[in-house]
Amino acid sequence: MKNLFLICLLTSLSMLGQNNSTGKAPKQSNFETITLAGGCYWCVEAVYENLNGVKSAISGFAGGKMMNPSYEDVSTGRTGYAEAVQITYDKNVTNLDEIFKVFFTVHDPTTLNRQGADAGTQYRSAIFYKNEEQKTAAQAIINALKKAKIYDSPIVTTLEPLTKFYKAEDYHQNYYANNKSQPYCQMVIQPKIEKFEKLFKDRLKKKK
Image (cartoon, rainbow, N blue to C red; front, side, top):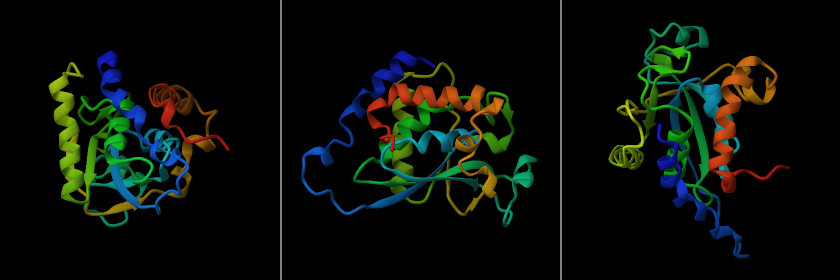
C-alpha cells in the first residue's frame, strides 16, 4: 500500500467533528449502524472503540445463513459468515465517509480471504450494507481508492447486503482491552491501533 498517497487522501478529515466546538448546544444524537469485516474482529473492534463519535463496536458474524452461529462454527470457514463488527455511531460527530476511511486504513483490502496469518472466508474484507445509501457510499470510496491507485493490487472488498448480524460470545467483546498482554494483541492488534492513532490523531476519543 502506498502510505503517502493514503495519508494525502485522508487529509480532508481534519475538519470533521469541529461543528460542535463553536459553543452552541449540540444537536440531538442521531445514531446509525454499519457492519464491517476486515479480518479478525478483535482488531477492527479495538480501532473503532477509539474513534470519536462511535458509541459501540460489537464483534460478531455476518454474511452466512446458519442460525445462531458460534465462533467454532464460523472458524471452520464453511458457514459463509465473516468475522464482523457492528459499529453504532453518532452522525453529529462522525460520518459514514470517515468510518470507511478508517476501515481502508487499518486493514488490507487487497488480500482475498486473508489478513496476515488469518486465512479463510471468515476473514474476508467486506462491507455489509443495510440500505442503498450505505452501498452507494461504500462503492464511492472504493472507486476513489482505485482511481487514486492507492494499492498495488486490486481491491477485493465485497459489498454484501446485511441480512442478519449475530453477536459473538461475551469473551470476544472488548478482547484487546481485556487481553493487552497476549502476544496476538501486542503483535497484530497494537500496530493497527498505533497506525490509526497516528493518522486520525485529531479524531480520537478523549481519555477519561
